[in-house]
Amino acid sequence: MSALLKIDLPPGLSRRGTVYQTQGRWYDSSLVRWFKGAMKPIGGWAARITTPVTGAPRAMVSWRDNSSIRYYAVGTHSKLYAATPSLTAMVDITPVGFSAGRADATSGGGYGVGVYGAGTYGTPRVDNVSV
Image (cartoon, rainbow, N blue to C red):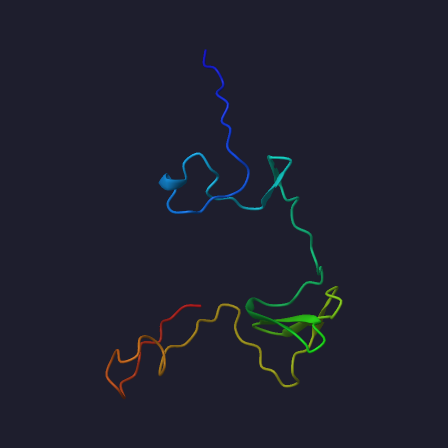
């Protein structure tokens, strides 16, 4: 029969050097915090906005206006959405006349793709880069 062995690690993370150099300390963690010397889970995620968006998300950008109000926008292959200032809903702000792309699209190669100076100037580039 094996006995349990108590491991007494101090609370908090230590990233001073390698894992070997920080023996006897917590080196890495995710979604935890210490409460009264014990590691506890943070408590999970909460949905800020439950409004679904249409399409495959391609990009997201966030910003603050001059009044420090937070905004963010999400671009999909078929629509453009912006979060309301209260961050409770997504609003469709797709420009009139926008042509939707393909959900399974790939990004194109061509001029400006890859390492500068690679390849011969003026020759076509391979167009097989995936998103």
